Amino acid sequence: MLTEIGKFLRRYRIDNGLLLKDMAGKVGVTSAYLSAVENGKKRPTEDLVGKIINAYDLDSEKATELKEAYFRSVNEISISTAGYSTEQTNLGLIFARKIDSLTSDEINSLIKILDSKR
Image (cartoon, rainbow, N blue to C red):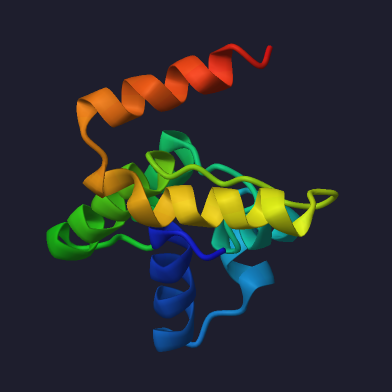
């Protein structure tokens, strides 16, 4: 799943004709790590954001865009459904779609149900 920072990095690379390996080398990380960040498989760090801003001398607008993408990305939750049944996967998807519409009482009820299963 592409995160906001992954989308930003991929778009920036493509718009500037940069290869993943070249960007990774310039900011001092491995291609595998940068690829994993782009694809949402690894969490980015603030240090990476700073390295990209400095390495590419991003203007304040692009730097702000990158920082905002970073903060939105680290607030995302990613769950692997490998090994889950269809029902379990569907439950996770339904929950993700409906969480915004749940009331506090509904959330607390769900927490009680799930906590009782420990």
